[in-house]
Length: 317
Image 1 (cartoon, rainbow, N blue to C red):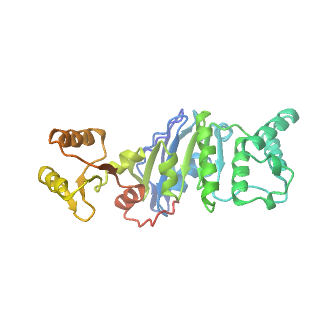
Image 2 (cartoon, one colour):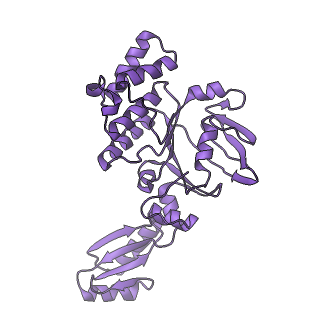
């Protein structure tokens, strides 16, 4: 069954573990210079997909192309075009931050001047200059993650696979990583993101695919996915009981909360449906004190599509 990875190429693959099909019928469309997030519960096939795309695992069948290169015939070219920042840091604790970057530069066969220039630039970009001469063992969790990502960028990759990049970080460090990710995309890098934080996918991803038992059960922008789930509504608050009663007679699908002086009107979150409601309120001269739109969040989407409780986050593999 096909899986398409469209960053100047595609992934067309079947992956099995014994008689169990790990990936089956995926169809992913990843555009250059965007963030694509793959969500899935334990065993969904997420990590298998990333491992195949990053040359760490061979597919049982099919053909894989990443950044315009065939994975079977040109694995070295694929590796040269990608970077991988895994869930567990690749930082060497015995080396300083600067030495970790220099080591990566040596592995990429950069000459001395280029190694020095790139190391200096990445230390500045990731706000690590002051800590450059300190052992990585003394770094905070957020600093280690920034150094890990900086090491990935030494090779100037076109595509970066971020596997749960903010696991264990505090909220401030997590948001710093989000900002770095946005800046990379602005510079033309394509990000393939897996995360256990649904808020992270909502915040960063241009498109999201939900993987369940090796199949993509939904794909789209965060807003498109939210609109697929029942429960969206517009909340109208009125100044007094009389206004509430009048509106309820006109808006037949609404449900009321008398104490809060509000009506809840079912809505799919689209601009067209919101405009229709506003026109309806205006044509009937209904005076509304406050209007707010409420849509299901990604927790609701994930629960509805996979049946997996999230409690604010979901473990993805």
